[in-house]
Image (tube, rainbow, N blue to C red):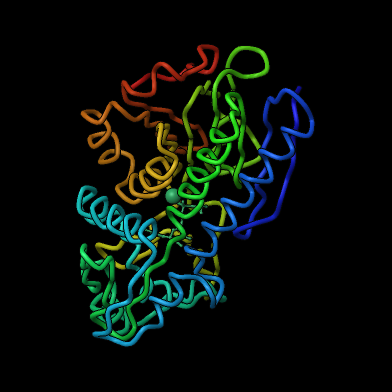
Length: 317
Ligand code: ADP
Ligand code: MG
């Protein structure tokens, strides 16, 4: 039987549906998955004081902070992905988030302020010690923003919990990032990919099985200081918010990777994203660009198996 539950966590809604032999077993498995997500939040949330990452973020310069191994590994991986995306993805952007006041009402920093913030931002402001799994801040105002991979990591933890409970078929929707396990209620899970500017309108459809799909765009969350619209995704290489050019959807087996890459490829922009995606066909990449009111879709080879054919009215790239 199919069992579904919903919870509000990490600032958004997490809905989990599972196929289970009985209602009790389904509810039990979902509760376990919710528990795993709350635990991920207690490690990763930068919106609460008592998380492990908050403890690191407010630590004094030069003092090593020993972290739970799973958090240490996640930060290590994210640092590696920062290098592999040429710095397009970089959770060390905290000082830039402050400079633009992206968590408040938004503000436009002066050129000097921006230059200063850049000197305080980046994963290079943190030193990693693998043996003690500790991280040391190298600059007072540096902090790590887990926003671009926290939901993905939490979905990964939820998947582990569900599998431990013997769940083989499930569908998780975490504020727009989805994870499909096993076969769907019919055959496969079919999910819409939103129009990059009008998020309530589907532009394409993809089918998933044992995959996660994450979409990043600038149209969803923004602040508007001095009439200038600033999206929540920054280009760490320039320190500036990324323009609202469209959206990137990444399909990957690992939900953390899907989350990381959708943010990174949005930063790179449509052309560079597709150049990056071509040899990386172990992940599916769908780029939706809004040009003169029309949505132009392009994708890599890795996405082809997931495309629902009636939605492929545009050309692959
Ligand atoms: P959403 O949270 O809407 O799913 P993303 O996964 O793309 O969107 O994550 C965006 C969040 O990631 C921002 O709100 C911010 O916290 C953080 N962030 C912004 N720019 C970057 C970047 N270039 N690299 C890493 N993290 C970023
Ligand atoms: Mg992301």
